[in-house]
Image (cartoon, rainbow, N blue to C red):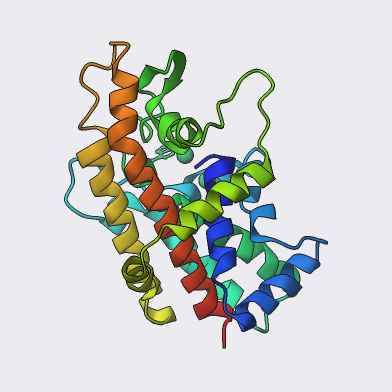
Length: 264
Ligand code: ADE
Ligand code: ZN
Ligand code: ZN
């Protein structure tokens, strides 16, 4: 996701931390004078230039036409988002680790639980997760990956980037609260039930599998006619509901993960 998507996931999660987890999060953020999860949600992207070897941690390239995640093929040397969620969850849960290391682990976990819910972060079609699929979206030249990282949600939430566009935290926070409020109690309960820490890896694989199926069945299944002007709106209509749900799931599950790792 882009900054808006990561902030939405973080804002939804922030609402649902239990008191113990919220206090722990607060104490870690305090180390850098910060107070909210959305303050750190895009740190992992901002540090990418300085740490090029972390680039592969943001996604998992499950081939689009493959049925399932295969670690040796899709996550060599733990270079994928699934392995990194496991790794940094353990650091975050370790009360004896240095606070600065735990804060950094929190930054990775907040970001990666968001990314694994972005459908195009769990597939590859020999196109770098859609990055090389050029297209026009509402009159703007872009690519399929960028449409899913931010184009669809910016269009839906009227955060249309013009030359003077800058990401407005307060605006995005209000959108996040609306997305959060519209989650049904049944969905919230189902998405929160992630089991204990030993099950986190299996859960993460399942979340990547959901993303992968949505990439195949939605993102890549509706590309026909994309050279026509009317295509953008048709695509928005089928894809935005999926993006919306993935952001909601990411937020609810991130809260569940943090409650599990840091809660009472
Ligand atoms: N680069 C290669 N595959 C990618 C993916 N699935 N998402 C983002 N960047 C990528
Ligand atoms: Zn992306
Ligand atoms: Zn990322």
